Amino acid sequence: MITEPVRQIAEPKVQCRLIRSKWMFIDAEPDPTVPRSGTSICWCVHTQKCMGPDGDVVTLEACNSERACFEPF
Image (cartoon, rainbow, N blue to C red; front, side):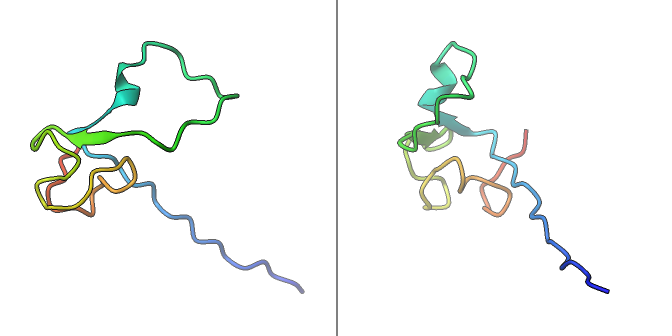
């Protein structure tokens, strides 16, 4: 009897409601055939800079519930 290994599925991280990105200002439906650019510039509403109130860099991936300054939607 062969058993398959149990796969651990990581729970998706929720982004902070205070993160802003230039992608928010594009008034168009996303095109799934066009890959998204990895050069998205993000900033925090509190600091108005690319650094959050906790001193860490603001990115779409990094601004999640693991940060002390995180605010959910």
